[in-house]
Image (cartoon, rainbow, N blue to C red; front, side, top):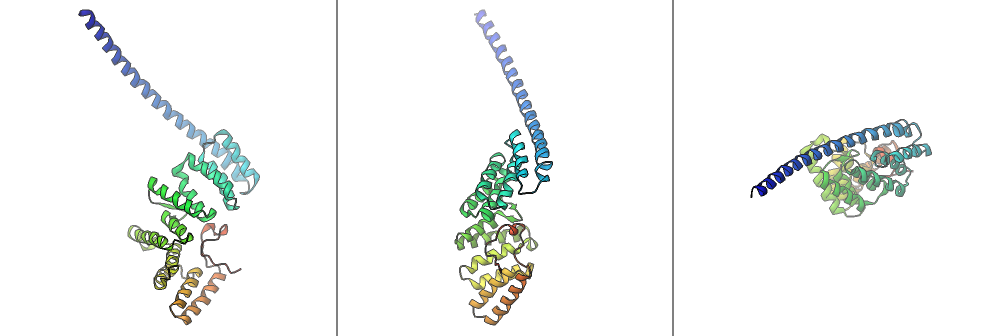
Length: 280
């Protein structure tokens, strides 16, 4: 009996000791992992500095050297999402969408939160794969919430994608919801004339000309010489029988267009935006 009690005591001590050792080992492991992550981040920053800031950025955007310098960095660490994005960006600006998408997919793979909304923007404005853009934005919103990319909300791009798919009612619903949200949360000064232009277009395409005019007028309050808004508003006026007013606004819109008062997004130099009117 005493022998059995001794054995139980020995086993109990061994178990307690093992648990303590296991806890210590786990803590050590966590500390080691934390250190390794920190070291990796520092290493990645060094690679970015060497091959991007002091490498690719010293060359012309579309040069072979730009790509070669980034490739050197990726050869040292292929998990640096920023390098993949910088490799992709010139491809999109040269309309090499398929190649660029392979690279931006890598950026999303290694940093989803950092680059998925950018990829969705590229799909909408550059590659024009609108269903994919909607899916990417909706997925990102579920994961990380409502926000903005390239000066516009995710819902702006979702609405624009529906507009380009001729799903005009869906587009209007998205634009209206986003318009109401921004008014409530940000205020009138936050409204963007391009958002209002496409919101108006969604009504125009459904022959709601009075509704479109109402929204177009809000856009013109912010950007009075916005030629596309003036041209489409003039068409609405013509549709409701206000021909003289329509013709006057049409002429004014053409003058403003030739003076460069058009869609003024940064990327308009690379891509024609939906419903943008070109006069040459």
